[in-house]
Image (cartoon, rainbow, N blue to C red; front, side, top):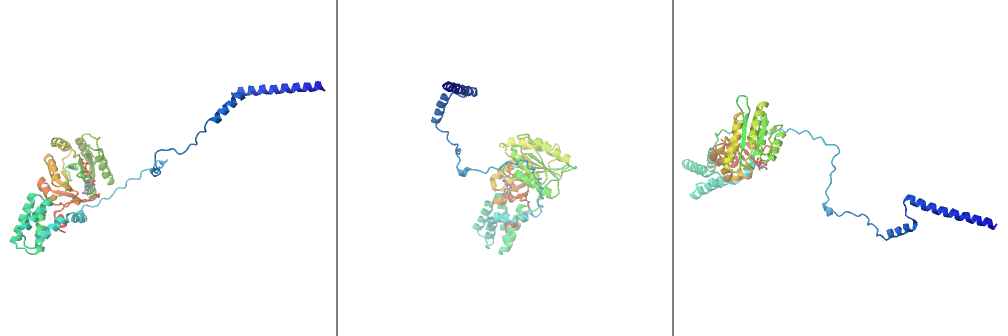
Length: 393
Ligand SMILES: Nc1nc2c(ncn2[C@@H]2O[C@H](COP(=O)(O)OP(=O)(O)OP(=O)(O)O)[C@@H](O)[C@H]2O)c(=O)[nH]1
């Protein structure tokens, strides 16, 4: 029995020792450290402070700073086909825009009428009348002429009736504005070639806007038009012009930014001839600091264009709000190119409507269009009678 017990004990010891060795071997084969080392590692791990929970990231933005993030569409949207606008016919536009003219010029009209409506005029009254005209930018020479004519007629006719005095004032104002000047746009070419309209003027006067609006006037008259962006100084000017054209289905010829304006003018007219366009409108840059530079550039643009077709009209754009100052700048242009017509923009923004008279006198060319607002069709063919009637309304 004892021998059996001893044998059983021995077997037990052998089995236990084998199991221990097996455990060690299996740890080693798995790359695990022995238990005592493992305990030390575990202790060290426990001593380590816990990693902080990831919290909100401080990006320096307050809650109010959050902007809406719009997801980019997965499918590219097909751009809607541009709708071609039908511009308003130019006839009667001055009548439609009359209210703006009446509003901006009311002080001039009221001033003149109140002076004339008071019966016999004293020397002081005449002087005040003269001052009113000068303050409205009519200009020295036309003012003197106007006052002289008025004095004569009122005296000769012995006028004491305010209604008659008003009538005479109206007639004299119309006379000084020039009722018989040819104000039609020369936009018809010869020999089947397009009419070529060159638009010049100081930058910011509204040149590009005017070219865009003129395109609309011509499209409304069922003419085919091509635009030339010869203002290569500013890329945005060409973009602006192109947008104006696209609105009424008119193409624009452009050149590289800073490129030669004359070559853009040349290419536009060449394209216009090839397309059989009725009219080519060429926008030019006005950002020229020296008269010599201006001479060179504008003179060259005109000369080079005329290798293709004659320029039928040179329109000078003048900002009415710049008054006599604008007139001085404009004079330089008229010395460089032969100006055949004037576009007076922003007449809605000044009480000095007399600039119409001064500008024609100073430059020897008729006002053909006036700008009376920022709308696409706010460029009106000018008419002396309608203008004076709005002045005296
Ligand atoms: N109120 C009013 N604003 C006008 C009129 N004509 C043009 N403008 C505005 O005048 C600003 C200047 O017009 P542009 O056509 O860019 O002038 P630009 O002469 O071509 O200028 P550059 O391209 O810099 O040479 C624009 O904001 C037009 O909307 C007008 O008759 N009335």
